[in-house]
Length: 374
Image (cartoon, rainbow, N blue to C red; front, side, top):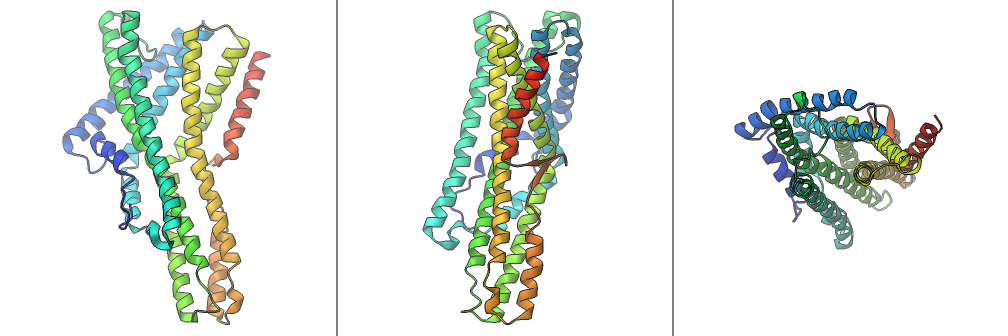
């Protein structure tokens, strides 16, 4: 997204963002439809799914199926809510990308490595679109044809249990799954791209920092470059804070739902008899949520590592080669700021990093074992 980039890796999610109607710059009609018509309808449907729990507490299999539908709609509703709420923050983040340093700043080899990282994000985006389309086609078209009836993609309470009500709910659910697929691409893929691009900028900053030589260059030149690096570091930290502001609640919810879904799957597989449909749906949901967990937590962990590397690079600069007290003081105070852990948090309750992925699986297994012994 920087001015010197030949490839706009944000092109696909931004197209979806512009079409969605939730962007601040979206046209009036799509915005009215998305925010003022579909969003209230989504909340009503979400309420019907929650009410449906009380009618399915007599059977564990039905309760699990209804729980899956509520969890799925919760994530869909949360994505759209956060997109609407943080529209101005997204615009700031996208504008800031234009201030980023170009990938070719330190040679072709370095540029090629970084572009491969961004291209991988692009491949993940395309895979998500394809996978979502296949899933949507199965639930909306293939399943009703095979079963010769309108099967709801997710269980929902049908007031009066009428055929008309069932058809309306089927139609509305499919609308929200189509919209949910679009928001999935916008919300998750934008995070993946923003976090990866931010990591690359930290790598560029470290390269720039390591190229400063106090022994060979003049004090004025070294100090000017230090100030430039420090100001760029402040910019990157502000981007990191904005990303965390948007995704903090999503991190926490993804972590909790991954634990509960994986725990449910383990319980279904090892401790109860379940039909193939419930087992297949449980496996499907677990794969999606664990993929989301990896997509969200790994980039955050990589950013934390880059922050630690930057602090170490500042510490090991050859500042002792200069007699300038101003430069030494500047490095000292910059080091103090750089040593603050570059961590993303989930609702202020958990630190988002790579070890948390394995921790979620361990907690899931422990909970499944505990429930089996009740």
